Image (cartoon, rainbow over the protein chains, first blue to last red):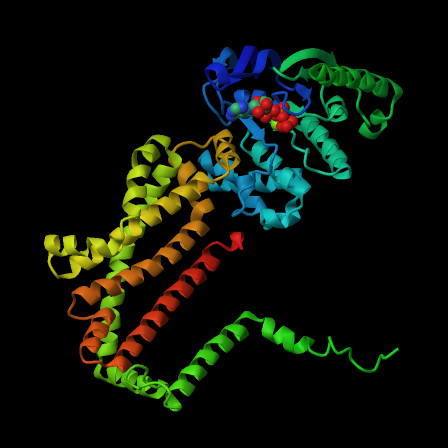
Length: 256
Length: 266
Ligand SMILES: Nc1ncnc2c1ncn2[C@@H]1O[C@H](COP(=O)(O)OP(=O)(O)OP(=O)(O)O)[C@@H](O)[C@H]1O
Ligand SMILES: [Mg+2]
């Protein structure tokens, strides 16, 4: 798997109403890599994600997936949305099976993989519940299982834990990290939570707003045997403070 | 502390709980009206030609039932409603989905439909009679005209409000084309479609009576207009009550279907 985002710009609107949202974005992502994009609200994070998913077209520049120009959405680029996007009329298990049914897989395979991915996200007991009967964290886990079950090569995560409270968010981060280690999937995580990005990703890009552009890229140390430990380690905290200053200065720049 | 005696305000709680059940109050309203009806006629305050007593109406109903007229009329009216409405509902569904999911189709048809929607369906009766005579077809078409545009536009609105995340999720899972409509859009709008049908069924039911008042050989509306000619207010009352009851039954049927089919939306 190789994702190449080359000099992508995106504007919405026409003429005098035109508004540039992304400016010359370059990204590279290979199999097994975990990349994070951090930026304040409105910096164009979701827009980048939608372009990569093929739900929108860049105004200029190009996005290639395994060398092929991205022209629309496809199952090889799975996505977990910012807002809960489970089908409210389907049970947790049926939601997980949904993508595989669209792909026309055999019944036996669907049953087997549904059971497996419910197990992966630890929701076997909730298989028959409807989304409204699940907590926010459980719903997002179902959404992740549904994306994974469709067998993507790249998993796009748009602030998947943004709506969760702190405690659940930490356990979900732990869960996501282990999942990534286990599956060796390529992942692109979008978040406004710096700590989240630094804990999970191998590389973090900082996005400046108006128009969205990458202003800083940091590679992170790869030793994370213990996330809870890492959260409070001095080197981690120092780097985090440094990046937080960068983010703050970007937000300050728009005031002045 | 006065613990042994219930507080004056809490003493009435069981009664309030009883009243709070929706059917209790509904029944109370109905009984009250019946009671006033009975009192008004029993006291002789109102001329029995204008307002026949409940008893007389009941007897008129019984005689219509025994002669078989009541069933024959009801069947005729219900049949017209069902054919006309089935046609309207069946065509409105694909049409509404097409308009709701395709901007070009929507822009092409919405102004036209919005215009026709404001033409009162009964105003089409003279045309329909000129075109199709006095048989079943004009009546069925009247019901179709009177409900199709409402059905279509309401279904279109339901489709427009399908959250884009749900459609886009399906796209990123590898879905495209028709399955998006049948597996995402259709189930999402199902509760609103049931409700649309339920609401517009009431106008279908109104229209069949109007059509029968104008021209028909049988039907509940026809019975009423005949009764008027002979000043049989008791038969008019029978007709009105039966029309109400059949309509209510259909309404409840739709609610029941919706609860069964769309448990997730409750
Ligand atoms: N379809 C659209 N039409 C017009 N403007 C848009 C559209 N989509 C996004 N924008 C604009 O692009 C900018 C970036 O939006 P985007 O949703 O990508 O931000 P974000 O970084 O994901 O923010 P958040 O953290 O709040 O989710 C916003 O100013 C938004 O108003
Ligand atoms: Mg966003």
